[in-house]
Length: 126
Image 1 (cartoon, helix red, strand yellow):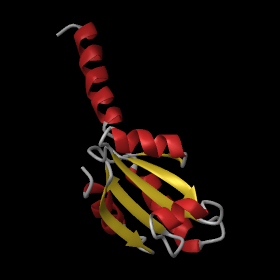
Image 2 (cartoon, one colour):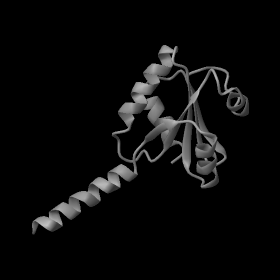
Image 3 (cartoon, helix red, strand yellow):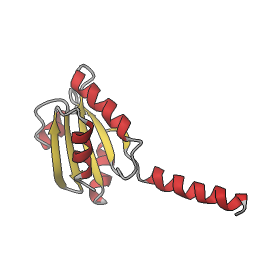
Image 4 (cartoon, one colour):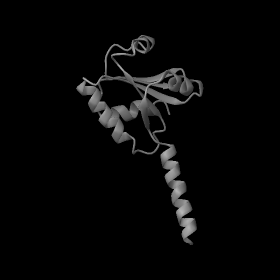
């Protein structure tokens, strides 16, 4: 096998892994709207900087970014300032993860910091 084919094959495999990976970015109304209109899986992480549970969840979510097959975007919403968004999704506590597929809520987690719990919640929208 020539080196060009090996490099091309490696890039294809790497590209497939990258395109099917968890993405974490700050919340924006347009990002949520686009994901919902496209019927894409998306999660809202209601996070507060002062919350130790939120920080633990963030660490787990960062670790999950390396897992193949979690093709979902997590939008990090500021729990203290996104009051309209909290009302819209009936969020009453920081460290809440609301998982959606389009307009449909598929799962909700409050305070869970376990990799299995957060992974399962995210996979509910796939």
